[in-house]
Length: 533
Image (cartoon, rainbow, N blue to C red; front, side):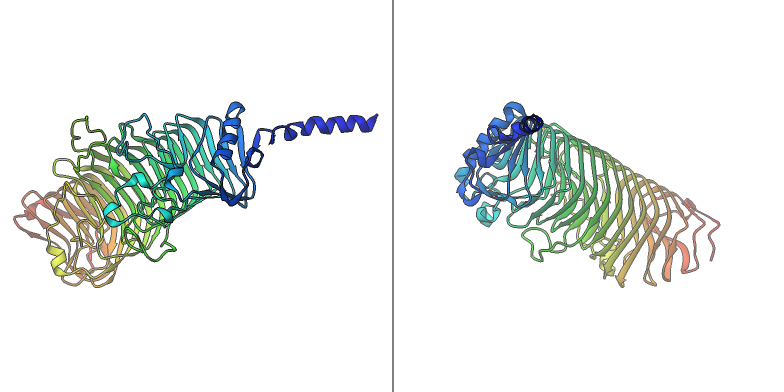
C-alpha cells in the first residue's frame, strides 16, 4: 500500500511533464516537430510551439541543437528559452522573413520590414538562456550603392510597442542590420547578455528607441557600428533609462544618444562602463579604434534633459567625449512641420578616464542663441596623442549647423583637451588633460560661454602657449588652475564681449604672466585675487 501511495505521488508530481511535450509551462520545440540539425527549416515547428505556449503562458524550450528558422513571432506571456548548447540560426534566404509594417509612425516606417524575432503590441515576453542566436547576417551583404536599402536586411530582434520585455543571458551574433531594436516599448530589462555584431553595415549593438523605463546591465558587446544607442525616431522620447556595468567595444560610438533625436532623451543614468578596442581590427564603418567613447547628440528638434554619466574608463576611441546641439531638422513623419532647434540641458559627466585619444580633442557645442545649458564635468582624466600645430590653435571652427553630427566633424579643434562653444552655466572641477606629443593648443577653449566655474584644472603646455583661452565669454570664475609645464600665460582673453573674468587662488609658478588680452578685450574685466608664484 505504501508503495502504491508513493507511485501515485510521483505520477501527480510529474504528470505535467508527460503531457503534450510540455513541463510546468515548458513547450519543447522538438515536441512540435523541430529537429535541431541546423539544416532543416524549423520555422513552422517553432511557431507552433510559440502559439501553443501563448494560450496558457510559459516558455518555449530550445534544447541543445541548431534550429534553422525564418521569422519567429513572439506572443503574449511567452519566453523563448535557449538552453546552453542550443543555437537559433537565422535563415540565409530573404523570403523566410515576411514583411512586417507596424501600425506606428516612426522614421523609416515602410523601409524597415523584417526580423528574425519579431513582436508587436505584446506583453510579458522574454528571450533567455545560455544559448546563442545567430542571424547569419554575412549572407545579406549589400553593395556600396545599395547600402541604404535596409528592407533587404533583417534585424535579429525587433520589438515594437511591447510591455514588460526581458532579454537575459543569451549570446547574440551576426545580424544583417541592427542587432536589437526596441521601439516605443515600456518596462524593458536587458541583463547579462553578450553581443558580437561585426558582419555587415549598420551593425549596431542595441537600439533603444523611444522607450520608457529601461534597465541595461551586465552587458558585454562588440559592434562595428554604434554600441548602446538611444534613439528617438518618433513622437516618443527615451525616458527613465539606466545603463550600468557594461563592457563595450565599437568601431563607431560606444555609447550614444542620437543621432536620430526627434523627441529626445530624459532621465538617463549611465555608470560603471569600460570601453575597450574591438576584437576585430578592420572596420566597415568608423575606425578600428572607434570614433567616440560617449556622444550626446540633439539635431532633430528634440530635447535632452537630465543625463548623468559616471565611472567610465575609455581606451581606444579617437574622441572621448562629444556633446552636440545641431539643426539637421529631419522629420520622422512627412506630414509633420519641420522641427525647430532642440535643447540640451542638465548634463553631468564625472569620473571619466580616457587613454589613447587622438589629436582631435573633445567638444561641447550648442548653437548661437541656443546654448547647451547646465553642463557639469568633474573628476576627468583625458590622455591625448597631442601633435596640434600653431595653425590648429588659431583656426576658426565652423558651426556646421546642418551637418550630420560626428565626434570628428570639426577636425582638429583649437584646444587639445576640451572645446566649449555656445554653453551656458558650465562647471568644470578636477580635470586633467595630457598631450603625449608637443601640442601648440591650449587645454581649454571657451567661446560664447555665459557663466562658468572652473577649478582644479591641469594640463601640459608649450612655452609660448596658454592653458586656457576665453573668447567673447562672460562671468567666468577660475581657481586652482595649474599647468604641468612652463607656458606664457595661464589665460588668454579675446574679444570686446569678454567680461567679468576672475582668477582666484591659481598657481602661477610656471607661467610668465597671469593673462594676456587681445582683440579688444578689456584688462579691467579681469580680477585677480590670491594668485601666487
